[in-house]
Image (cartoon, rainbow, N blue to C red; front, side, top):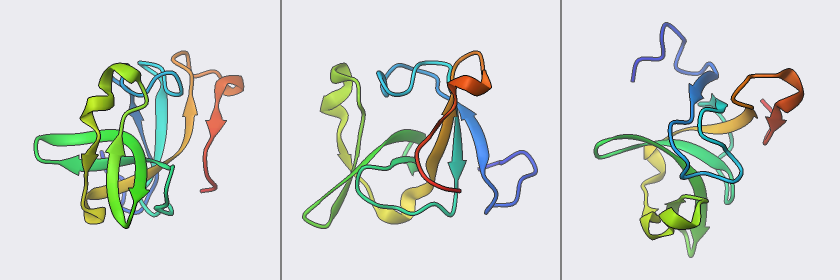
Length: 109
């Protein structure tokens, strides 16, 4: 993965490209990913999958890790994932316009 010159441990920003994580994350919002973030049940993660990368909520059930979308139209896409495929944890988001007042934090950096 090319992080645009960032060290692999530095937080980086991505734009959400679809509505699979609505209502919490709107299409076109910006999310901040911390590669060293704490991986635990319920956090939002950025992970590598067979055909690229994906942004989902992490669900841990009976010691099995799953990636789950939030939007009800995508719920059938819940999939198991190896913890090593998780590349970072979402720590913040801003609205599509990027206004400071629209930023929301999820964990501490």
